Every structure is written in C-alpha cells, then in structure tokens.
Amino acid sequence: DVKVTQSSRYLVKRTGEKVFLECVQDMDHENMFWYRQDPGLGLRLIYFSYDVKMKEKGDIPEGYSVSREKKERFSLILESASTNQTSMYLCASSSQGWNTEAFFGQGTRLTVV
Amino acid sequence: QQQVKQSPQSLIVQKGGISIINCAYENTAFDYFPWYQQFPGKGPALLIAIRPDVSEKKEGRFTISFNKSAKQFSLHIMDSQPGDSATYFCAAETQGGSEKLVFGKGTKLTVNP
Image (cartoon, rainbow over the protein chains, first blue to last red):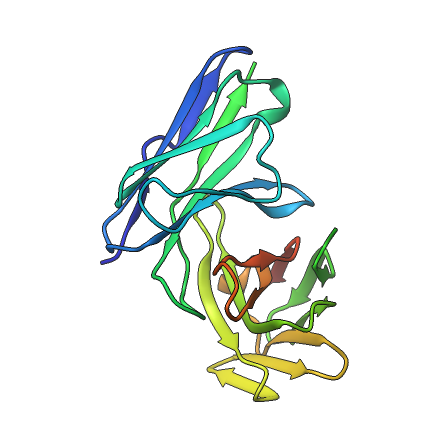
C-alpha cells in the first residue's frame, strides 16, 4: 500500500515561530511537492523537488523554504510564521516521467495565531 | 494567472442524476489532463485521466470528455451517488515540462439522497 505520510494532522503555532512540516514517502519517487489548499483557491504549488537536494519554486514560494536531504523526505519550512499562512498543507510525490500519478498525503492543518 | 479554469465552484445533484464539471485551459502545450477526487479529511487521489489523442475516456460511472479545439474538458458522473460527494479538481500537465500539475480551483459536489 503506497503511502505519503505527513508528520502532523493539526498544528497550532504562534506568529513568528519557525515551523517545520515533514513529509515522507515510501514509493521511491523522485518528485515531491508541497501544495497549499485554501477554500476557493484550490491547490497552489509552493515548492517541488525532482531529486535529492534539488528544488524549484512553485507559484507561491514567498515565506517558505524547503529541504530534501534524503530521497524519501521533503520538508517545508516557514521561517517566521504569519497568520496568512494559516492553511491546509498537502505533500505529494510522483515518479519521474510524464503522465505519472501524484500521490498525496492526508494534509496538515496549520493554524498560526 | 490561472492556467486551468474550473466551474462550477459548487454543485448539488440528486441521487441518480448526472454531475458535470467543466474545465478550460489556454496553454496548448498541456497534454495530460487528470481529475483528482478529495474526500473531507483526506488528500486528493487520482480518479481518471485523459490524453488529448482521444475525445473520451470512461471508467465505470466516470467519463472525461475532451474537446481539443475548444481547449475544454469535462468530468461526467453518471448515476451520481451520495458517496460521490467530494471535491473534484481538474489538472493539466505539459509534456517535457517539469512534471508538475496545474490544478483548477476545485468543485465541491454534494449528492443528496
């Protein structure tokens, strides 16, 4: 059973805190993604990585950074959390190549107070 | 810039009815069009996908219709069931691109019993 696991389902953090969201996949996928989901805005890509230590900015990278030290793990970092980063964060992975299925984790609901 | 426009934002259908969700795109380089289904509290999961060399693809009660000249594609759910109640996202990907999906904003489908 393929799996993308996000470390937390719910997080509450204070404004200004440094926040780490962790994602692990067990499918040996090359590609990993972080999306943000907000009502009425759909899924917006924050960052993605197509290999260890490689990363590319998505559509809304401001205020975020990422780390991929191992193939199976992709971390999203909020350097200084702000209330407008309150959202659902979804991690996904896919194998390299064209037309491959993306597998999503269950999401982390982050609230910044 | 929204590359994939999805409508309607929400849809209410009676059990047994047909649910239709529409998407339109501008980028003619898109050549893979998947639909993802998301239940509350879960991450999205691939439902069905189509490539532009065919005009229709059917899997059970779910059908994608694709109109290349109009740059539109749609999801039809026949004999809609309460268990189909979910949020549906259309997406598009470019061949030879960076293997990242561009998502529509989503449609929340409610099927009443």
